[in-house]
Image 1 (tube, rainbow, N blue to C red):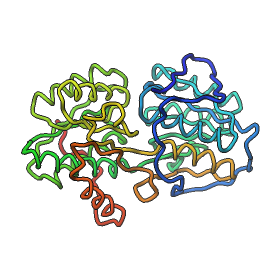
Image 2: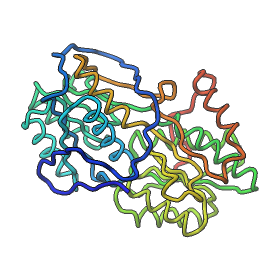
Image 3: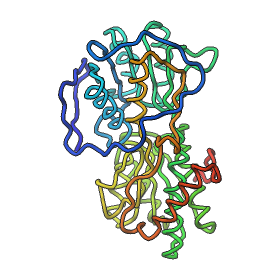
Image 4: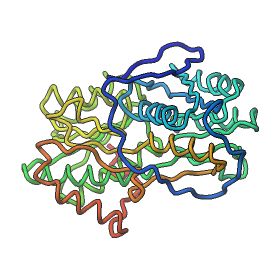
Length: 350
């Protein structure tokens, strides 16, 4: 289980030990793209880094928690002084980001695409503070604040092998249908789903695909209801792409003995018998790399993480998917070589 940090004030993290931390997989090397600027180099000591979660919070078993892992890794290995603020609603984004900037943090990290507009506003108000955002490009447009660094992932490259495994599983059991439950229809969610759908169809062209959005990332009951509806309609594998809300999908899988696909982190430990695999993105690695780079004097407008640098991939494959593991290894090799290029557009929308 993760440790929950409560409160709206500044919460200093000191020597925190998380029980059952998710395994941090992937390389720390990242491809830095677009404009790069040089900053004053720093080492540990008073180097303060703040992190603002989205409304999913640190207990989402996914990308907020992984961001926190990256922060803790930087505390342990680089000696930074970390601070975390959790957001209970979208109204908290601007105040939380502003508090951390005003408190003198060298880098303020916004966790999630939904913070893009609030971060843009705050970054312009604090031009001497460096900011980073997960799941959104940084300062690449003319009207974008130049002190924002994007930490972006090729989610379609994680969704594709998870989908291919799903298609093989369907075909082997003469099942007809798989599905996905997204939180909101935003780019990082849709990239996952686009890759998943393409992977399923590549392995089983006759498969039927269902897709739905809960319109939130926190209400487990709404995602569970959507998953149960899809399962009632014949889905034998449900891909959750909805953060903390998506934990309801896993609950639906356990309740109905249906296979599910986890997201962001390796979520097999939540239901080892029913999590076929997980589509992973190493948000922890992205956070750590952004901090390390800034401390070394480098700040870029965009860090891009993909399958070749270990930024995305899949997690543990459960017993139901084990017979197909070698084929998935070959699929991943095909993506790394460039022979397989997953699409970025969701085709099946209902």
